[in-house]
Length: 306
Image (tube, rainbow, N blue to C red):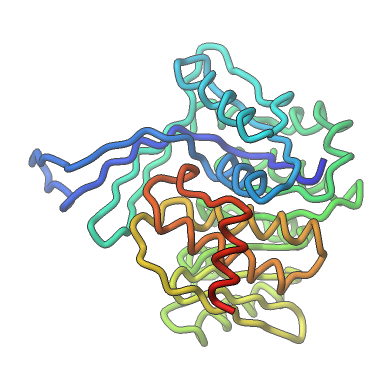
C-alpha cells in the first residue's frame, strides 16, 4: 500500500447558478449534478488516478448515498476495508454553488464523518503500517487527526495535513509533527491572522508557521501558483493558464497528485510541478472527482508545455 487517507467523504450536491438568491428570493438555476466528494475522498481518488495504491479510513451513513460512495472507491481501486457504515446516521453531504466565473461556495454537513474516532485509526493499524504516506484533513474530529499524526510518527510514516476547513482550535504542537502542512491562502489567513493579499504577505504568514516549528509549508494559491517554504529556502511554482469551468476540488486534486509523485520519487519540487498540472486540468471540467484527469492526460498536458 502506498498511501492512507484518513478523512472525510461527502456527497456533492452541485448547483450551477447565475447569481445567489437574496433573502426570501427564489431563482431558477441552469444546472445541477450529484457527485462523490469530501476532501479525504477527493484526495484519495486523485492519488489513485495517478497510479498510487490507496486505502481509505472513513465513515459513511446507512442511507442511500453510502453504497454508492463505497462502490466509487472500489471502482478506482481504493481499499475500503476500513470504510464503515454508522447506523442511524446520514452520510456527509456538501451543497456546492458554482457561479459563472467558476468560483464556488460550499457548505458541509459532516454526518457520519463526525463519528470517525481515534480508535478507528488503531483498528486499522496493521494495514496502516504498510503505507508510505498518511494524508489528513479537518472534516473529521480533531482528536482523530491528532491520533493519526501520532501513529505516523510512531511508525516513521510521513504525514500530510491539509487544514481544511481551517480551525483556530488546531494544535500547532501536533502540526509541527507533520511533514507537510498544505493550506490555501484563506486557510493561511485564518490560522495566522495575517493578511494574504500579495505573495509577499503570504510568504510572511507562512514564515510565522516555520518559526513555530512547522517543517514544510506549501500554500496553494489557485491561479497564482504554489509557494513551498521550508527552513532556509523557498520555491514558487507557477500555475498553468487554462480556461477554468469549475474550481471545485482543485485543492484536493493538488494534494492527491502531490502525494502520488512524492511517494514515488521523494522529490518535493517535482511533486509540486506534477500536482500543479493535475489541478489545472481538473478545473477545465465540471464536477469534483469526475473532473480529475488520468495519469496519461497529465503527461500529455505537461509535454505540450515543455
